[in-house]
Length: 431
Image 1 (tube, rainbow, N blue to C red):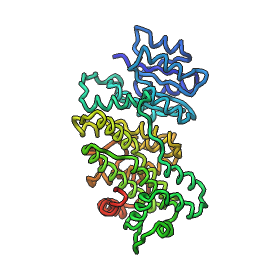
Image 2: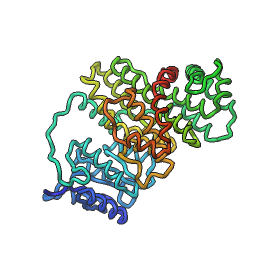
Image 3: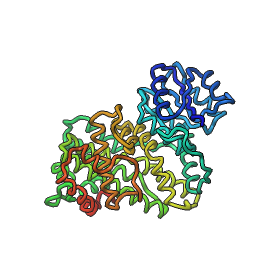
């Protein structure tokens, strides 16, 4: 049986060679186009079908954006993966809006290419062979459900720019910029928080919870900052600001979001405790990274709710909507966090937290450590029935993350037991 063929559109010979080698290792064939003429020539050949394209959007020599536009007209449904080194947030957003199913950085790795192939198979409903099973499998015709067709329509509208990625909340942006100065005075943090009384009230309420060591009740913002410090208070405030982005008029969407947001807050709070246990240098960063790793879920649900409300129609099956969110949230979450100019770590974790392993050579030790903390918290929450999904998502198992973080056997039950304790305590944060 012939192997599936992928086209590499890139002028970088070293990159071409390495990507072609990886594709061959995964049981796929590769052809290379070094300019627009070669790219279109490969696509137009009648004796060979191109199943997907990897295209460098950052190369001025290739003119990747122009080549992408050129192939989209005759081949509108062809799966495209963007590749590039040092791409800007505008490059990433351009890729999403032009229906690229994934983005991988140079140099390509087996892990990043494998994940891209999985997304091609899901998004294009093709049966590309799984790595190690070259040529296996035959496409099975399927009929898209109303819910899945609806999600695909939402994705299309985002890609063509008719639905814009939301802007970063002003207070979140202002806090982030202020706290870039590690020596900022507490009065500066207070000045920002006092602009929004509702967020200030949530900060005070959350500061009184047991999860944040609430011994002796406090009733004002200044006391909260004095007790917990700038970074902790700012993390709570940023969570409140993020929560304020999402309001739903349709009851079904509101119910799903409430569970979603509760699971995300619970996971982030548990991850913060795991960070403290492992003596991580910045537990507040872990809290925010873990809270925002699933921003794509929240964003996609908000857009779907808004469109349903305008069209005065209800999605047939919310279970199918949730399944679609699970399958698409990583790419959209990463795009959103890039647009918000978050630290690049946030987008990496959003994109990679459901990788099968965190051993890819393009991940540094700190990023792997953070991914394991987020994964461990997420899985412990799911194991206690507090997560979003009824089945596990890809990622290392609980024992692998416990081992990677160096948490001894005698302490592991403590964190499993903390799930329900935290869930009962963080009501002010969940809202």
